[in-house]
View 1 (cartoon, rainbow, N blue to C red):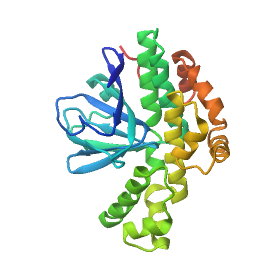
View 2 (cartoon, helix red, strand yellow):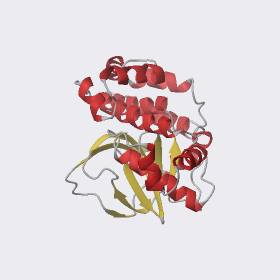
View 3 (cartoon, one colour):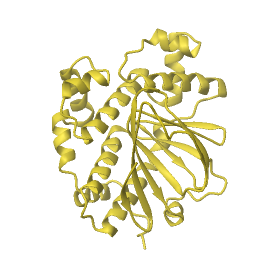
Length: 288
């Protein structure tokens, strides 16, 4: 764990969890509300009888004082996330201060937001940030996430379908570097391949291929933010057939090659990130 930023409203913590894992387990509440943004791998958050996956393409909100447990779909992998803790003032400003709210809630997002939250962390790590500007960027980032999730992630139609889709999601995010066939996934879900394709798209808004690609690109973005040098090895690790295959996927989804994205991350700073966020999500109220 590394605290990257601390102010009166926010605390930003970078976490890396490697095999063999030591400190994962049960937390008995007493912590502020937080969003968990995954840069690499995945985290399963178990709270209030519900499980949410923090993974590339999906952030998780834990309400304050929630008891929860953490597990890892990929037992022997390396998982990295950014925890953004915030106080009651921010919770209220974001419209999330509901006493009847679920203790654990998932918020879907796209690859452009994946890039944004990696940039946010890198900008804070570079240091020398103006405290007010840093808090404004954090608030802008959270506000940009909230309006998008509902249309990106429809809800499953029933508990049985939800369990089938969850098994398949966990299998894919737990084996990002593998190309599990649709027949293997359908067998895991206990249904036909055709039925799986239909319920998965209806439940997530994505095809199996789109979901798998999002996990690969999202994990690759996190590693590029960490300064990954060996791009051929990165492509292999996250499941692309070659470096050029990964490059084509990056250009199509994000308009940059992996090499260009890595250099883009190295130049990250709060001032330019804040200016870009300002064009995407209007401010509700200034932080005091």
